Amino acid sequence: MFGFKKKKKDLGLTRQQKIVKETKSIILIVVVVFGFRSTFFEPFKIPSGSMIPTLLIGDFILVNKFAYGFKVPFSQWLGDPVYMTGPEKPKRGDVIVFKYPKEPSINYIKRVIGLPGDTIEVVDKVVFVNDEPLSAEEFDGKEILEDMDYGYKTINFRFFKSQTGVHQHVTQVNEDNVYSANFPKTKVPENKYFVMGDNRDFSADSRSWGFVPFENIKGEAFLVWFSLSFPWPWEKTEDGIRFRPYRIGTLIDDAPGLD
Image (cartoon, rainbow, N blue to C red):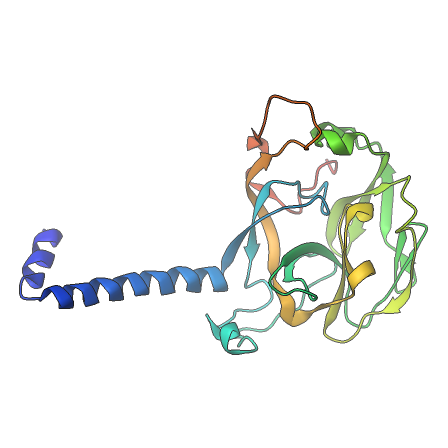
């Protein structure tokens, strides 16, 4: 029925008019799709191990782009984004996706450790926020080690159940790596954030390149919707790329080893 009405309505149109009409329809679809993507949720792929064990290389995640305020679609393309309901501010412990301050075309994902006005210090791999150590209880991490790719299984890791703000998660450190053991006491500037990877000794983060401006933050990561394991270059395996179905639907806050 609907197809007949459409054909009858289009009978009087010239070829050029039909092309214009179809083009308008395509443009409308593109605008709706990109508007949804830029305003609500956006998918990202985890390319590195800086957030292990919370996020694995090959995880595909969804990012909530209105977690810190509802942006008017496309307003960020004209300059500073316009917010209809905020903006809200990130909380300590949130896992955020943001534009890398030194190269905004690259997206990074890290955990918020320091808020504007906080002092941050790292002493012998212990993180202090406002002169108080972050909660960290060591455990064996056997479950996490079993799920790691071959290359990481050869590293001397220590695992800690951590509490950062309202978020419980697991951090890991490389006992043999002394390069990132310390960070001098530093105050977080206004409207900026100090971020770190949960894989403390394999993360390029605020300790090396500085703070994240609020305007660089794209949203809060909250869900793994797909996951693939890629073999390391030197790993002797015939399995190739492996599908990890058990990762699908994993909430970012449901860190391994917390049960």
